[in-house]
Amino acid sequence: FNKINEDWDTFTYDGYLKFSKNWLHIAFKKMKTGGSIYISCTFHNIGEVIYLAKKENLELRNIITWYKINAMPNITKRTFTHSSEYVLWFTKGKKWKFNYEEVKKINPHRTKDGKVKQMRDFLDFIEIPIVQGQERLRGEKSNVALHPTQKPEKLIELLLTASSDEGDLVLDPFFGTGTTGVVAKRMKRDYIGIELNDTYFTAAKNRLSKIK
Image 1: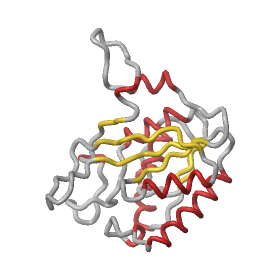
Image 2: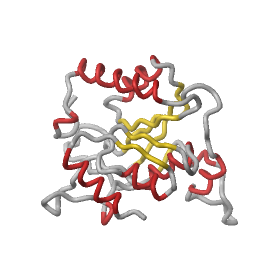
Image 3: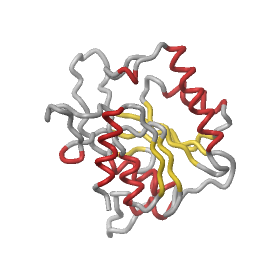
């Protein structure tokens, strides 16, 4: 796979399978029974991730479609426009946590009289723009994103609302520029972030220091 022009996203196919199998195995061992794991992916690797996670006895609960309302245009005109990513929600064991009523409050859609709605028009299909404006971290050149796949804080907020409470511990083994930590800190969750890239690590550290 070579989907993003970065060393960390370049694998042979067999190498990617081995890498994914290894980190999923470690994650499964570290998860408590009833814990949740959310895995972001695209159509390139969704099949492999589902297969490998199920091999670890993780139970697939939902496939959330993140529709990017400002996705890049279809320049090549040789395929349908790639405007969606997917978030796979797996759980370990029984009695997993899902804060249904709290998630309903996040649903931007309302009934005609302004009340919260059931989530069939929201949870499986979420419309959030690609990170932009002040939320987007920039590199040395102001017109270049520091991290090519920085996730929207609103997306992470939804996931943490659904599957954690204040004081719970959230692990992000691919921390990037620290979005998970930023949202966890704001929501009064504890967090652990793991990141190998020095540039991303420094950016995450600086970003987190500004969150009270």
